[in-house]
Length: 374
Image (cartoon, rainbow, N blue to C red; front, side, top):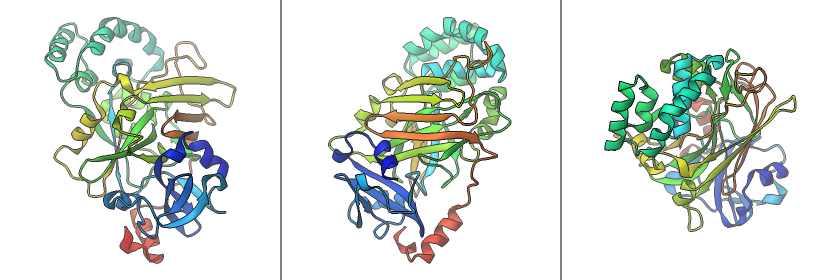
């Protein structure tokens, strides 16, 4: 387990402050990494959401140096627990065009290539040049409507309101090293490597981590009303490895300039590399947070996927059919200030069942005498 922790942390982990979760034989524990040492914070805060609310990020019991890893029988979990899991979509020009392609192809990958060329020619330059919600964006919308090129996806790409949706239920996300699932009846899908902002109940961003917002292009392409079915499936949300807390050496500006690298290594020897450059995002991350919070209140806080620039169009098998996952794909998402999130693809049908919901989690904490430290 020591090796996995070292592999998952960024190179400058000794200078950063990190919080996460691990499964012990007794149940989930809150852990922190500071100065290269692992601490068990569970006696102080039995949930990550509670630690964030109280800013309880240090102390507890020293487990040991990162190099020695976790105790025997422990393994890493996703670093969030009671937070709502939210996501923003179509926040990059490329992803906007790809969503329009999915819509016009009705989820059929064979139709995508010709539509892509047409849209990139007519829409690509314009959508990259305007600020969402601006007068110039409204003028572009008018022109695109007249040309018959308008789409609901372009509305959230350049209009005043961002797309914000619920990605997955509380406690359902998986962490690094776990299996990540796609529906067994999906035939056109891909990973979505993203920066995930971690917010308290009032919308203050306290840190960031990495995420894979697994996407089923065929389902959502058939109808935007299938978004929930396309996004919320067993093991379809991966977040980790740790939350890097904001401090003097890591701030929201590091999120704004982050490079998120992706590699997919297939069981047949296939390899795909991609990159999500946060500097090309159409909306500022803090604007996305404000739109997510809106007039609502999340008493246990929330996390927010910021969207992705990455949209794989390379053919994997048959020419013209683009990319889709195969069981056994190893997906690695890496950013030099946030670390590495690695998951192996299976189907949601065959992924390990999600068994500890809110009731089971609270019961476990109560049995351990930790209920008053949530």
